[in-house]
Image (cartoon, rainbow, N blue to C red; front, side, top):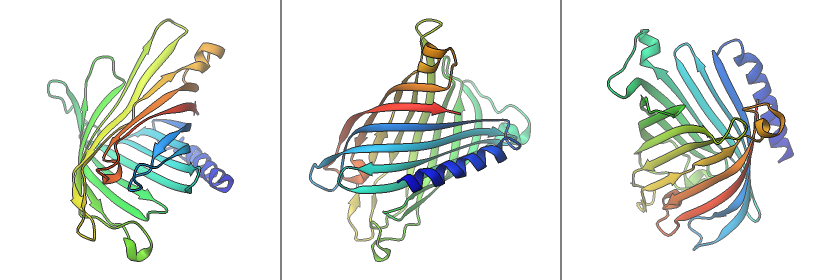
Length: 260
């Protein structure tokens, strides 16, 4: 795992230097999470899990980009790596005009990729984003996209490949404060992925995954430097985890976030 951390840190550092000349703004974060998570398709087994996440978001001339890399350590299942990335091309920015209608403040075209190392999973996510003007929220987006499988399947040593489906995702961030010194935020996403069959003809159930984070800005509270260090929890609710109708997860994970 130390090799994973060093490689990821090197990539992010190089990307950060290059991105400074390209993007209008960017935020990079390191998340440390610890909790007990369910293992689907194992009859109810769970394990203590430590996750280190490198996360990046930016805005540029024609839209914005988001990606994260999870380095996952289970107490009895070893390590794994998981990646999600999504590029949003804003029609408002591309056409240089406001794309607004009522509470809608922009529309975009999205293109994404999901990848899992051990499972040899590859998913392509092309679709449409609607950005909403919701009072109090830093952002509130809804994405409707195809969920296209290009996985290697069992023959290549991965999990069974699947038919294509669709995904609907809501992402958001809501900051608030109890006083000038004590600042908080609730942020995360909720997704729904439709049912599909795997390569053996077995149904992979639809799932709902919600991952809201509750953050406290401890950097501001302790040192007066806001938006740098956060502590809190991430609550994970996963109905039919990874398509397993025998696994419904409800878990709280301790969370520590550093931003740079």
